[in-house]
Length: 449
Image (cartoon, rainbow, N blue to C red; front, side, top):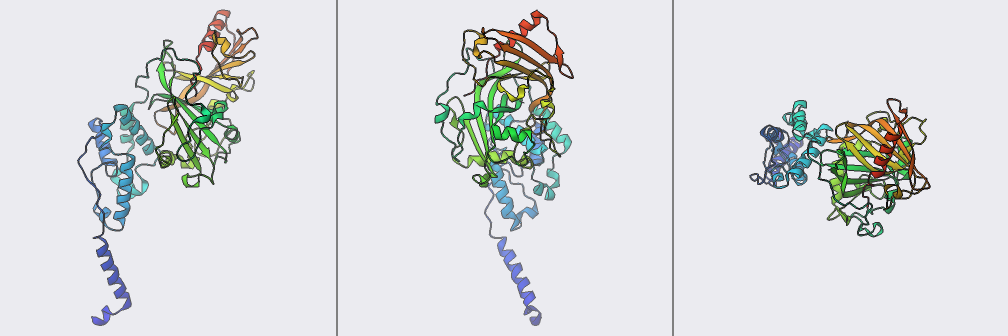
């Protein structure tokens, strides 16, 4: 027996067992407290969250026996504490109901994109997998688009000057600056966000637009810049949903070297009319990365650019929305966007474009907002669900394109409409043409800072 114990291999094994036993005594606790302000949801929804999410995203301590074995326990503890910082269902109830739903929308997106629960977690905890039936129940509870949009704004000035000016806006804490040139960038996508009742223009600089046209988006090239501009959705007396109060502008800047610690992207967000930086310190960018992590296969970009270029594989480009016939007198998707709206009855969304680079201005008449020779184009699409973001709708198949030209006299003229499956020209009576001209001219330019 003594000879056996003296064996080097046995000594090493015994030392390993002793070290493993001692290791079990070295551990920091995982705090566990009663739910202070639990999320306010129906019982069937709470049951799903408790089964699939509470192990990491609550103040409850729910560990399997094998989770408590070192050194795995250290990894489990780190994951739980990190998860609680991002989302804690035990305290989410102290926030406003709209905020609670917004957080749940993000959670559902993470689930349907396969990012949550973490795949490595469900390997050892298969009961935490969200079944298709459970996911459908969560989506049914959230019911995107059923919330009432904000009430109409009164006396909204067109392009009211904001404070501070774009050139003096403070950079984000990670050094990303608000590029004042974004107002002249072209449209990549329009989004109707039923999850948080906002409209969004997603604009791209010349590098981004060229990359989308040539399908060079995997990855996007250095120098790419996106501007995502958000407004509250508001009902108007015409029964349509229009952009209301300006909410924020976000930027993504691609520089693989400068932002190598944040996966090649610089992130920035400026909120409100004073364009206040969103972050409290540079760590805010981790929130952006966490949100975009499920689409890292698309170089962290949720947006599907409206382009006829194609990419093999998963849905990356929005080819259908860009399918405007070459026979149209103009191709307005390359022009500057003015505003957008949605028709909740027809399930369509529309964007107004202008051919002139000059921004709309205040004027005594709607037509005087635009310089002589400007052509306005109203493109209307059917809406479809955004495959990358539950609760959002994006442009689908084109339904119609309407053109109006501003004459030298300051009046609008030359109304032309293209509609139907092939967007063929539809002759309008003089009365209908006058009504449509007036409608296009009275669309208020969305407030862009």
